[in-house]
Length: 121
Length: 109
Image (cartoon, rainbow over all chains, first blue to last red; front, top):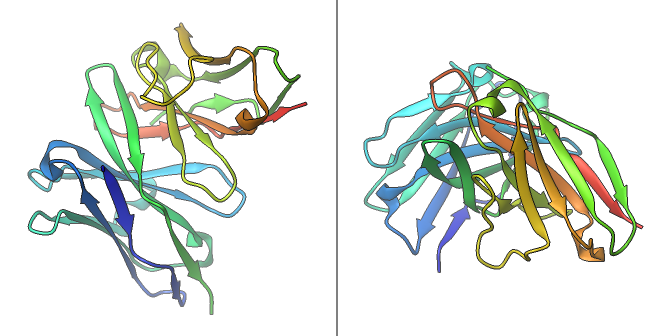
């Protein structure tokens, strides 16, 4: 079945970097965009950026420009999200989500299980 | 960029109809999609496009749009519909950025 499986929880110190993986299966990896979304404890969903697994092009939310890097490995059907210069406010659950791109809407139809990233000294 | 605004909380009596709204300038150009999130779980897509439901989503969920407002309607709310609901849409920047609403906590009484 179609699924996205993310890497496990991480604990990082302020100033460090974290790299979260998201392995896709059950569909043609290069046929769908992949988004990253995060959710701080008790807060709402926040869109971080998008990667096109076909060519590797990316686009990031302005808030994360310069700190986030999204990459993909087509040989393993895996996308990665690396966030640097971590601070306590980055403590959140990070999700990857498969995206449908249509002329008049975007929809995220399949979500990973989430990866908890805790930033603490 | 743009913003999407949702009411923080809404309640509905069991079996009644409830509408959850989402407002934003980007909704004049793009349809919203809607997601249901229960505690400790990943979000689930419930409505996308003009008014489409993914396979497995009950037909009591429907969507509509007018001007800068998108709505998610639950007709005959069930206890299991108690959850947080989020809208999202492409923003108006032209960069294929996406924006989420702040979410609405639905309580079924």
